[in-house]
Amino acid sequence: AAQASLEAWRSEEARRLARERRVLEQQSKALLKLPSKKEKSAIEALEQQLERERSDAKAAAARHRLTVERLRCQSKELQDRNAELREEVRWHEAQQLNATAFAAADARSRRKPPTSTAQTQTDAYLAQELSATTAAAAAATAAAA
Image 1: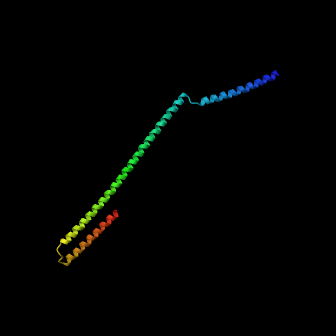
Image 2: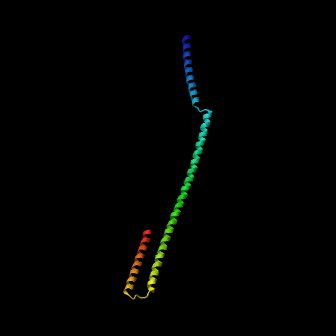
Image 3: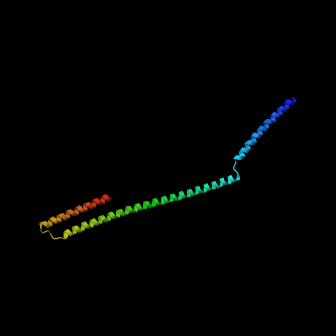
């Protein structure tokens, strides 16, 4: 009986020691997996560098957005100014055509009455050419619009 109890105690102790050995091995493996002081400082330095890079990228993106918005506004203003200038050019062209037509009509009214058939034919030709030029200019102005 003493022999059986000694065997039971011995097997119990062997199991307990094996269990403790497993626990110690697991703890040692876990400790080996933990980073050392050197590794911890390297990880921390890399995380700080990553954070700096992220903030720099965020600032660069903000500057880029502002630049794009400023250039869009500038482009819109220039397009509007261009349209205004085109309209002004059309107005000046129309004024020039009106002045030319008025001058030609005024010159015709100041002439002496035609004395020959050749003079009448020349006046008719000039009037026809003036109306054709005026029509072409009006068509060009309408096409430009």
